[in-house]
View 1 (cartoon, rainbow, N blue to C red):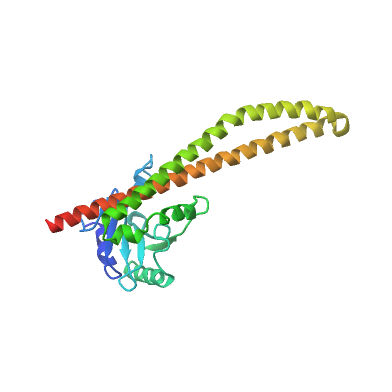
View 2: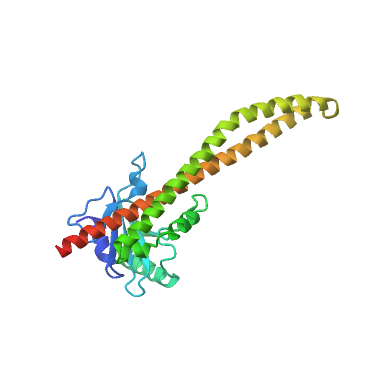
Length: 256
């Protein structure tokens, strides 16, 4: 039995496990809940991330939802508050931390919060505007929830196309505009050589071209940022679709 399987059993003290995500981990036997790959790390082109497993769990006291990630190789447990934003209260979060500290005294417990650089809050807002995590994990009408998830996937695809437009626009105009700006500043500022001196004019030319290049770099990074957010929205929608497909399969097995 793997460490992650033991961890899943220990989580029963807090509440039921609703879904499981795995990266390079095998469960035997598999729990009777949706089991899917960890898309964030499976999509990476390198394999430097250690094997780990994550579980969506429900607080049996309050019904709140949490995501807990176990990384046995590093003796590390992460409470992901981004994926479950708006689905739990501070009291339930504190109970979860206390339970994990008691059940896993030798592991380091980390709270993973939203990142401004990665645009987590915008990703959260885009996802929650279409469908809630509670509906995906617990909603009775799977067909209706699937329609909402499809809308979310469409939003992610449109965000990705918008980022492509921004990226191509920046890459297309950066070279020509910088070349023209360099030529213009060289010619225009040359008229002020008598007042500013050769060194002053040269320095001013460098500053102006650098400022223009910095502006284009900023807009290029914004395009990359939008691409990152759109990919994460799309992956979240794909994860939700996999959970719903597994829920439907498990229900059909139970009813059959």
